[in-house]
Amino acid sequence: MNLEPKTRSSVARALLASAAVAATVVLAGCDTDSVVPSGRAQAPLSDKMQAELQAKNMDTGSPILVRLFKEEAELELWKKNQDGEFALLKTYPICRWSGDLGPKVREGDRQAPEGFYTITPGQMNPNSNYYLAFNTGYPNAYDRSLGRSGSELMVHGDCSSRGCYAMTDEQMVEIYALARESFFGGQKSFQFQAYPFRMTARNLARHRNNPNLAFWKMLKTGSDHFEVTHQQPKVDVCEKRYVFDAAAPEGSDRALSFNASGKCPIYEMPKEIASAVQEREQKDGAEYAELVSRNISVAESHKGVDGGMNPVFLAQYSVPGVNVEDARNAGPVIVKTPGALPRTPNNPPAQTVLPGKRIEVATAQDTVIESEMVADVPVPRSAPLPKQGTAPQSSTVGLASLIDNIFGGQPAVAPAQQPVSQPASRASRSMVAAAKPPQAKPQAAPVMMQTASAQSAKTKPQAAPAKQQAVAMPALRPRLKDEASAQPNPSSEQPQEMRTAYSAPAPNKGGLLSGAQPVVPAGTFEARWSALR
Image (tube, rainbow, N blue to C red; front, side):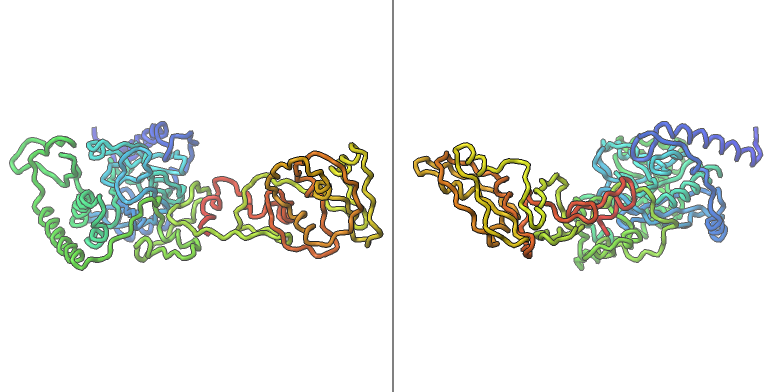
């Protein structure tokens, strides 16, 4: 039964909607957390995009093809024009990709996949935890033939990546809408080509020492097929390698059958494609050999550096001593993001390590310095200073007074008249300990942490204490409380002091420990990227 065009379009939309509902059961961005359905997947194409399609002679429902380049951090969306060829519609800067250059090998290696993948309506996820997403289809037949593992590797929004390619939410709305319209127009699937970099002779020469070079040269063959024809290449896998635009031999009536791990069948390539690809390969091969003979510099290894970000986004952060374009060899970027950065990012980039900051010794007059790194642990508090003109008040009995009471000693006599600002003084623990008899073998005194107040007391003149009665007593274990009981003169100028874990905390004007960072809610833009500012 033949259907009218409008009827076929309605059926296609109904089938795609059913596939999208089924996809929500198994897809959720880079993880499988619960999802909340939304209508963002039905957002229409903007007036600006509609005008761009018209200017480039493209129908809204014509087929699309996606190409992605890691090192340049760019995603290209190609669309078939009315001449029947794929033409570049738009280039999107990638907000974040994880891992290093090279294919994904195993689950958990944080690598983003490289290769040729097929995207069907069932792989579109309108309810992703990362705004919108489509599943790359990793592992494909080639990946499985090599025993590679991994799942749910996506292209999604939210600018957060754990083995995926992350765009901004605004970009994903547009990419998703273009894919949706192409499916509504009758395209059964679109091709997703993921490359480590643009497949030029110079880039291959720069990465000539990389162990993935042979794999990348195979990907370049597929890229050449697309470049010379501007048609989606037919991709098959046999003998654990990609085969492009393979066709049955002339005169054969049997369809080709490919086994990813088995022997390749006898096939041939259309002559016009074969000749164009061969010419391109010869040209690029000669350029590659010439660049290697000149010993051009080899690209720096990014091993241990987690992923990358397009310079359009990196330029928004001030990173001292880092030249973005030199570091990534990305060249000029002429395409701007269609929208702002995401509102709720999740994890920061790790490719830039800022130098450590020197930690200075705090003084009593120091204010809170936010750049210092101070552990968030409780700090013991010191007793409050006495008011001027009064003797220090204490809720506990001093060690010297306790010993005098036990052995019948005389109480300490208050010193002569002192200025109003000078607090009364009493005998210190060290003076009492000096009066002990020599027959008792002293124990080795443990090393004491000296507080700032005790150090200040040593450096300032003290009032002459009253004479103490010498009393025989056993050796005393020094206690920190007695040391801390000596209070500095509050009327004189306070010198700089060395802070320890037992010192009083510095004045806190902002409600934070010295050097503590302000609390920022998790999942915000500041929480992710403030380290690069």
